[in-house]
Amino acid sequence: MRAARLIRMALLIQSNPGLTAVALARELEVSERTVIRDAQALQEAGLPVRSERGRVGGYFLAPGYRTRLTTLHPSEAETLFLSGLPTALRDLGLADAAVTARLKLAATLLPSVREAAESSSRRFHLDAPAWFREPSTPELLPDLARAVWTDRAVELAYARPGRDGSPPATVTRVVEPYGLVLKAGTWYVVARARTPDPAEAWRTYRVDRVTALAPAPGGEEPFVRDTAFDLAAHWRDRSAAFARALLRATVTLRLTERGLRRLPDVVDGAAVEEALASASAPDPAGRVTLDLPAESEDVAFDQLSRLGADAEVLAPAALRARFRERAVALAALYRDGSGDGEGQR
Image (cartoon, rainbow, N blue to C red; front, top):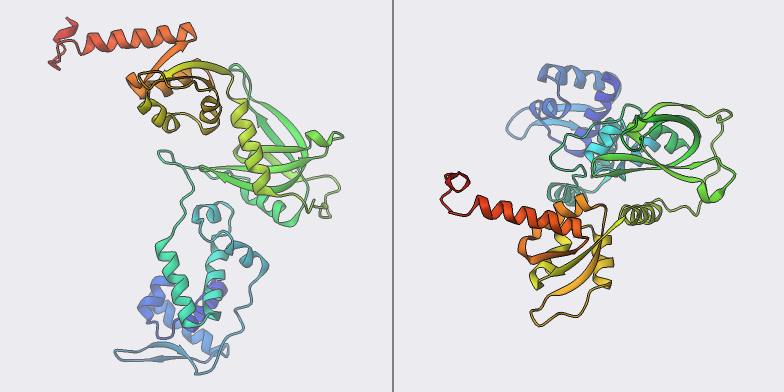
């Protein structure tokens, strides 16, 4: 730990000449006394670190001296591609490597370029997890990430969700992990399974359902990666196919102009696209009739309730009856408008 801190300190002084002991202590999360001791250790190691007192004082390297510590280790270079995802870096176990990588990069930049990079980081930040829930870090994510980085096949145990309320069933698979995807705070691994049928080879697993992980038998050597594989394109195609597969019900609607405008705000994009393709011409009142794919009648009831009177369900009859019951209940609740509950007595 101290060796890593000394490297960080040397890089900080090189990148930002004149940093005070207070500033260095804050950056390194140590005491000022520790900073003074570390500066002495750097001097004993041969680095020309000097301190200057006064209003413009601080720590400096000798004029013209630059450390040789700015060569990026491969793991540090890899983290630069994720530098806008602090949560992802922490989950993957790469947060410390990212800090060192950024310091090394900053130490090699001209002051004007370094200032531009710092300005960008102050203005743009990507926060991937969803609202209203605390994202959890899967225990085996760092191990799985190492397998992805090094192209090593793994044998994983996976808790496959049960159907119709049945408990999960654990299955074992030997896979070649091609990539990791962070979607709304949930990690997924895209892998190629070793199966005779190439059409069934590509699989996607939720990392938090991976219960055990080990090197695959005979997996000492890296697997041969398909260079044509595009992780982003694969995820985009599979996500679209998954979204369409969920739409197992159809609801016939009549929408006002306002309801048609608001439909994309309450319904999945794939469903909206199919619904608009089926829309009729507007009637004299400006209303259109269309067939909306839905995951289920329950989901459709929750989604379409947000449109209020701008959406009228025509079919199926059971769903139309549910909206009628909801309307009757609301009318009874708000009948007298007093707000004191007397309308229900």
